[in-house]
Amino acid sequence: MGRKSTRNTFRTLITGAALAALLLPAAAVPAEARTPAATRAAAAFQHPGVLVGAQQLDFVKRKLAAGAEPWTAAFADLRAGKYASLDWQPKPRATVECGSSSHPDNGCSDERDDSMAAYTDALQWVLTRDQRYADKAISVMDAWSGVIRQHTNTNAPLQTGWSGNNWARAAELIRHSGAGWSAGEVDRFATMLRTVYVPLLTPGSPRKNGNWELIETDALMGIAVFLDDRGLFDRAVDLWRHRLPAYVYLSSDGELPVAPPNAGIEGESALVKYWNGQSTFVDGLSQETCRDFGHAGWGLEAAAQAAETARLQGVDLWGEGRERLVKALEFHTGYDNGASVPDWLCDGSLNTGLGPAVQLAYDEYHLREGLPMPQTERYVAAHSPFGADYFIGWETLTHTDAP
Image 1 (cartoon, rainbow, N blue to C red):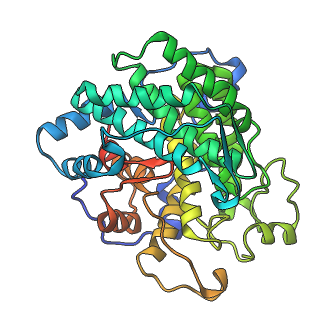
Image 2: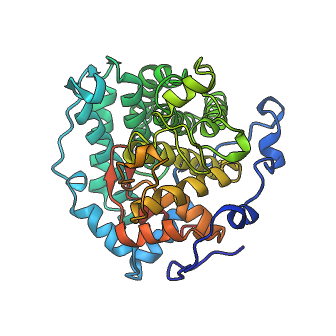
Image 3: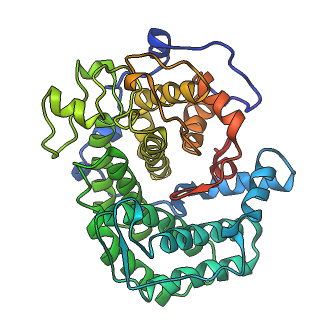
């Protein structure tokens, strides 16, 4: 199906068998994706190719030049925010210590904010060609690559994922846009990613709530592209393929959800506990739905971001995750849009609020592929343009209708 205009509105809710009829079966995985990595030719990575690519950036520049919406309003929001300021001063430190919920917060917020500022400046540079923003992004990245040595405490892997995502996106754009980042500075930044970030990301976090491992997978994939490391990229793809089925339930999984790989969480009682006490499972339910929609949204968004980077590199994770992600977005946005909560779902009480965690999957499945997503469409219309949050940044600007 062809691209839909963002002005088109679907007025009928599609659920159950009707939606399933529009979706490819879970087994319908592209032949290339089914081929073991070891037997595929190691094609060169496409650059820039972490979340945003050259074709998308050219498309956005044309939209901005024409004063088109929603890109113009989204770019105005970016430029009005704190991350876009040329007065931004980085706060690097050798040890970033992050406990549960970032308590203690010894450099955690600073690192996340600095990495998002670098990505925001990189976007401003490639969209305006104002050298000041390239220089600012480079100065922020150089400040951290010359100082940081480790992440510590209980939230270290998740912190590494949050910040690693932003660093990889910023570095990829700056390195492959003629911004003037020297080879020595690039090498030092690459060494930082490989020695400080990759060791915490590669194992994953199988026993944690699923948003952890999906965020870590997303960061690992972006770093792998920046480093031109095929082995790391294939590791990230493998993590994604095993974790998404354990994060979003489909009735085709059976009576119980798929157990997270290598976590030792087996059997009904253990799985119900892991799914935050939920014992009735329906299509689109997330492992963190009954925790809160904010964390569930992070997991879904991380899966979507990784799928988008994989798309730019010729791997169709979007196709593999189609049914789970479409049903998950429709399920959650329906309640965010005000649907009444049944007694069987999370004891009749939900902590809603997905935040900016829907743009990428909405763009892929509704705008690119033409699948009806009426609840998600309504949510996007009510809440966009989407700004920046932890590892999510400016996706109304970068991905609305993007080729």
